[in-house]
Image (tube, rainbow, N blue to C red; front, side, top):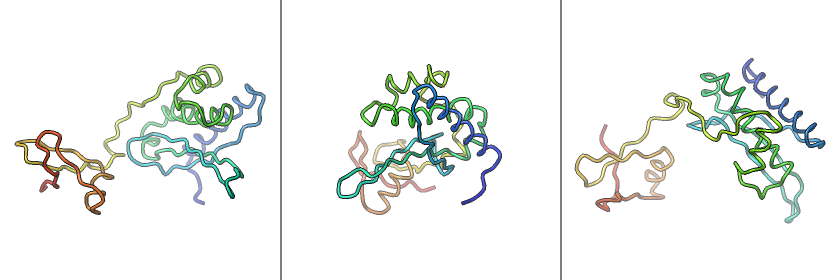
Length: 178
């Protein structure tokens, strides 16, 4: 395992503080999630929940939070103030209320407001131009029309797993020459 940077250590401490606040609030011992800094693309953070089963019997639940390292470095204060509490609230909600709640539902909003004393906002306003890969430009039979495809869709086309059609001319999209 690699050592954490100063910013990563501080973000880890923020998550730990949120878990402690929620443990006290709900009078319940909550599990600290694994923290990773491997998220890429436009998302600032992501809470993940996995269930390990043996022969259909639940053996244990694991919780993790993934942070976008590049966006964190560029927007550190916002990560401390907003992103880390936001993702941690998902982990807390899952542990307290179970898996049958909406991701940004009333339980999550209550945790954000009443437990963590934060505004329950759902999206960030970060500049993602450096974090997001250059889009792939595709063309169809329409005149002067370009279609911007994500890396995932581009790779699906290249691997011949999918094809995409223009909604107007119904022609298959092809990669535009650069």
